[in-house]
Picture 1 (cartoon, rainbow, N blue to C red):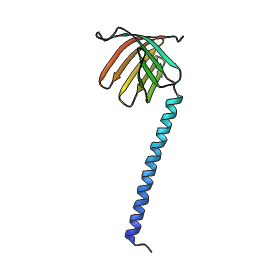
Picture 2 (picture 1 turned 90 degrees about the vertical axis):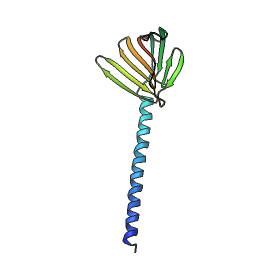
Picture 3 (picture 1 turned 120 degrees about the horizontal axis):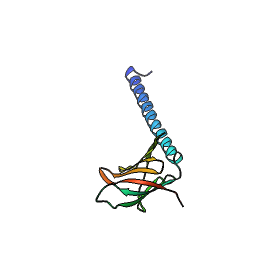
Picture 4 (picture 1 turned 120 degrees about the vertical axis):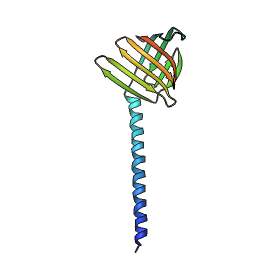
Length: 137
């Protein structure tokens, strides 16, 4: 028969193992859910011809977002692959926030063919633009 001290130690170990298993399982489930939504919720693309609102930036720009590849392009070059996103839709428009793991960020607010786009790299503003959405050809 086990002593009281041994029984308490075994009980404590069972509780610790149970708690660690619960937390790890929940994290794995959240990661799997996030991957599913990242790949399933947004599809297609968004192409925009933009005019910079920052005086010392190039005036004419092009932003392209490939939702299928989770990639943001700026003036023909890949800017970043986003790893998380939020979308808010209302009767007034749609707002997209796209973020990668290195703090690159795109914020797009769209109403019809008009969009306002902010591209960030951490605390650095890459560009802030008024845009017109383009039909893909």
